[in-house]
Image (cartoon, rainbow, N blue to C red; front, side, top):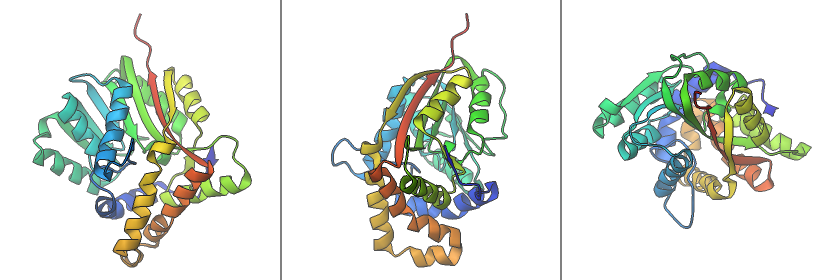
Length: 279
């Protein structure tokens, strides 16, 4: 695991309150990578990543889902619409919670979705509350990932599933690659990036059984080529600079994360783990 000790929780919250409009303009209704099989549009690629994770997790009709780091609610709405799931979304950002709730209302999904503004590391739910714990690109922002997975395992019903997509540090990185990962952590407000082996150990320590640990790096890297080019074309740096220096660093690190994927310093992982069924 590679850590960036300077990151603070309040800065993460501020970033998402300020940057959500940038995400929407630059990328779309999902705040996560796209998954490419061929030459799909970014919009299709974003839906494909959600659908790939749902297929891997074997999402079933009507499941109770906790979407940790739900952002603007794109995945929550898709799970509700496509699978009839009942989704509780959690985001640290008041802006994102309001955005997600409004979008769900516009799409006629208000009864199937609920969005909470809360810190995922301090929120609590009753044991055995959910069939599926779902999280796309949120665990990077957690300060104690192992503790989160131990708590999350309690929220799952016996036989329930954890489905995670996460930015990862590569295994056995050299010093230059380590610096690339650190620069990504600093620019994208990640206290740390774990390796695939770290995540699998955290799952096992939480009493979960790891079923899949897939590397999707080659399928998602195009995300940052597109975002970088859009930042340049739309001349967004002056606007970001006026809002907050941290937002400018964020935009300038788009090339950094692309380089980190290409060098092997970073990977993009998909994980499926299950809570053992009750005897």
